[in-house]
Length: 370
Image (cartoon, rainbow, N blue to C red):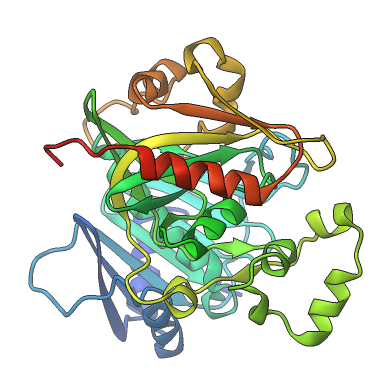
């Protein structure tokens, strides 16, 4: 284990960067945001290039908007007083702890031991990064999300798809099928925008910009089992096992699979930006009878705001010299006020929901200025 040379934030950052120098640099473009990722592991660099293949660009001399450093190092020594981040609503396990310094914040993942340093101009991850690439990817994407929040976007816990520059978002509590429904629609010819996070900004009353996050969907076995495009991701043994499970057990299965959008559905099917034309809120449950989809007045259904409002969490640092962004319900309402919002209740029926939302997009007219 590393014997921490100092509790001073900036000295720690300098120590890691000097002791474990970067050997490989990855350049990416997330729409308007250029991202540079430096790693000291060529193995991890190769993994990230494959994962972000839709967004990798040639080396550029233009300074990146976001620069991230990922270092494979011995375990970080956990000493001093750490504060625990309480679990999110509906969850019990503590995942993160942190310490605040005058120069920035250090965050430690309890399960993996990965440690992250965040401050204006500093985005550093250290530890066994090769063993936990998903947390590395989440960190890179969090840095992009922060950059977007600095530009007055709001963050939604939602998946997203688009068709001919017309976008749909899907919100709902964890496990309600946001990713499953999105992938069903991608199988019907729509493009994939985002798996679990959307960023929105209102340009004018008819123009709500919607940006996704470049993360492959991670889905449960039930999603693979009931989507003909995804079933080949299961071995025959796994397929037979999951087919034998009761519906409730299959619905709650914890094993996750990454879905490579371009490989399965075709090239250029992963896009990060479009215009939002509608939002579906999945409030259905297994065994609750016939599905019901109704347009609602979101201003009168404040109980549904918690399905899509999302805090940026421990990794967010306000832009230097500016206040914390407005992420109150009224801010979300201001962004979504002129967008059709549909609540999906009753029993879970992906076939009916897919047909409804596909028809909705097909019948939605684009603004003539788009």
